[in-house]
Image (cartoon, rainbow, N blue to C red; front, side):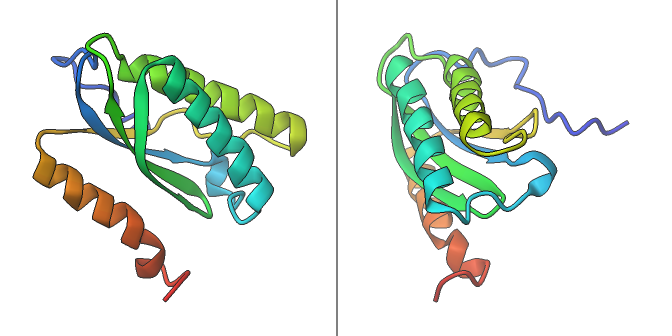
Length: 137
């Protein structure tokens, strides 16, 4: 039965110098990122969590109902799961205080990137996402 939980890789511990492609969708796929104030608030909290867990946000793109992130660990002790949890918690908490409703779906999607070429392809995909969606030309 499909639960909507893609889950984490069971044989990978998410700690160390790795790069990840992350996607977080809004609850009920609501279009909340059409408001600059919402984007700024959420981005600031994601960057806060990234700094706390020693991650660099290499690229990002807010679409109306989801966000794409390309992140890179900066330390051997960087833990992607420890970045994701507070990133979504902080941003969801501050969003619900300023706006109404729950921000995030419970689960997101992550992909571990294996080499620099893959990282470039993912960055290009992130930056071209609004063009493919017809939001910009």
